[in-house]
Length: 241
Length: 241
DNA sequence: ATGTCTTTGTGAACGCGTGCACAAAGATAG
DNA sequence: CTATCTTTGTGCACGCGTTCACAAAGACAT
Image 1 (cartoon, protein in one colour):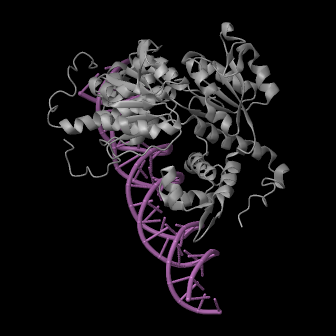
Image 2 (cartoon, chains in turn green, orange, blue, brown):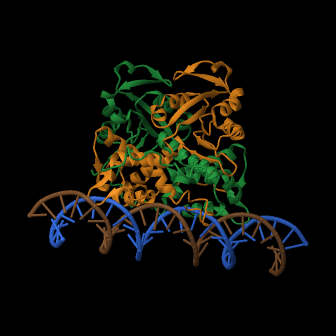
Image 3 (spheres, rainbow over the protein chains, first blue to last red):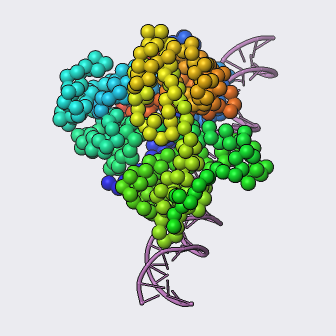
């Protein structure tokens, strides 16, 4: 109901901290690469370097999953791939629908990373009747009238929203009403969802703005003394009364 | 003044916590929407609801910027828009290059959110000679041979990488060598960069995997007793010696 | 001017995440 | 079997971020 009431005790989901869960896919990717090179075992130090994290953090992360390492040797790559995959729920197939087949939606549909590991694009949905039937990434786009039926028929529980901001909340509500309980939102809007529904958002412009902040700071440090006078030029125009 | 001696902790950017910086764009978006509706002032409670955060957190965030509110009234929308924009460095124009014009790169080039606020796509770059000259989003794609010259000529300090994973590290190094100091990475790889360079990564498949984890947990909680026997089916095949 | 009412700004407590540093565990050699 | 060496798993301390709760500040009415 309420807007941003994501006060979930989601911090620890099953004894596994949220921060650790967020790193597991990173480890999995590094391990998969090792597996393809037929590397049998790997130490926490090596794997941590490959994943770009601290080795102590990696060991602590794995300790939440269990004691899967061998002291003096390291971790068995294949075994760890399996354990992490299972923990993340990637040993089963997740049907996913993508709603909003614009430039971004089409890019997502074509993105190999989805199909590669446990995810299957079950349907592409768009509100534009002109799009209906047109194949994108080999999958025919369906009209949003069919949304509820598609979700239901395919047992979809994960939805991706790549619509314009204005349509996102409404699409979100229809997805949830139809049975979706996890949403990946690319639309630049805050979605309000009932308890029990997980939302993750990916916002391109926000990431750029954060970079701009640091970039400005870096530029400002070099100058430092030069712009001592005018960081807030004419304020009178926008100053409140 | 802040020229104090406590500049050692590189994590803190300018007294403003990183977590706060990450939320400023969120506030800015909510404020911009209010501004377009000509709303003169807003309380921390209202704005927090619109941004999907806790009101106390919002007030503390703003307190790092200064005392811009009026007790008993709230915040002046226009003034706050200006202050946050300035803090984020959005009052100046940031030329950005996008490297790797595949599906995702094209989507990014077309993404309105870039141009809308301080960012300008200065060039699109791709390694495929067949792409050269072809316009995407009204901008002709240039070959990656021109990368260094483009960066230099346009004074680009922010680069977006949307190449395949295999090419990302090399592109990254060329960008940095040419003068880029902030990178937004969409390629599913860990980039290694020298100190002083900021990298933010957006990884679509990782987000999905995190959702899958929670989804599995939700499904498991309902069953709970049902799958008491076989969560780790035949282990003998993958068990390490 | 005084009192009331609203909303900010922040001190303080708490909890999570991180990293250090080391003891325990096991492999391996003699 | 004993000694040595490598690497895991974790207890502990610390710092950041979040949240509560309230005093201070200002608007507004009388």
